Amino acid sequence: MSAISLYLQHILEENKFNISTCPVCGSPEFEFSHYLNVPDWLVSKENFELKKCGNCSFIFTANAPLLENAGPYYESEEYVEHTDTNKGLIYGVYHQARKLMLKFKLSNIRSYSKSTKLLDIGSGSGYFINYMKQNGYNVSGVEISDKAVALCKDKFDISVNSPTEFLAEKLPKDFDIITMWHVFEHVYSFNEYFDILHKSLKENGHVFVALPNPNCFEAKHYKNYWNGFDTPRHLWHFTPKTFKQFAEGHGFEMISMKRLPLDPFFNAMVSRSYKSGLKFLPYTFTIGLISFINGLINRDKASSLIYILKKSRVN
Image (tube, rainbow, N blue to C red; front, side, top):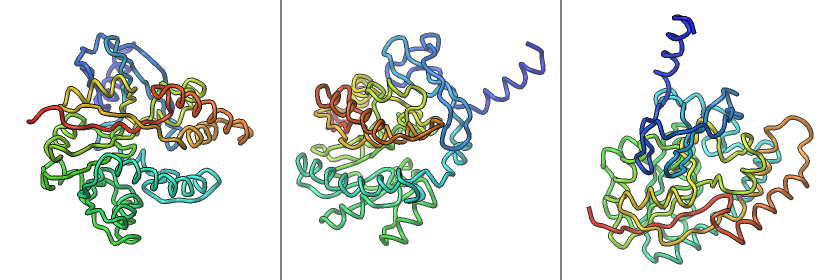
């Protein structure tokens, strides 16, 4: 390789979020191996590499942009949580499914806690916190997108906090419930977030974290087209085993896992949409159904999971 090529490679690497130790087990970089190349199907079509830890099998996006350069990768009308778009079949389906999932989330939260002080991290356009507010909850939110913050205010008259305020520990420290619905896979400051979650939760409180699961059938079927990888926006690709290990390392006990029942169907639809040619809906439904059944038989194979956590130690 020429000196100029080496210099250009160095510049590119300097602008990437490089990971030198495994976030789950702390293994050094030489333990990492190539897992899969996954393009950014949504925005840039740029190629990103997933790597896997040889010790604990944790999968992560190895060459994501630095946090300060990540914004353009979210600038798409199809990034529904920040734009609230309902254009096209897929996002029309998404909006209908969300109504069902709001009831599902409320029911699951009530089955673990009767208390009502709730913090939602990654509030998006505000549908969840508004629904919980309508059902008697005292809600607070955290959201990074200015566009989504404006939607929260304009649609629901709810003001949410910035991640900077959360990380500076300016929010209360007595929440009964903290939720992160498909958010933690986006978070750069993963250790800091979980340490502050621990401080912000009452001793008998609960944390609900929803994450896609690369162990599921549609991930194995669609491979680098799988919507759950969503590079480079998704940095971390937890399985039940690796998330349990991560949570325990931050003072939490995983007390349960719940399937998100509609995710295999939605993920199959979106994953197939990234491929050229006919978007054959009955076929994608079949893939989603197989994944759904696999998750019924074995929750470790579910498309997406809600992990329910409680504190296992006091800081």
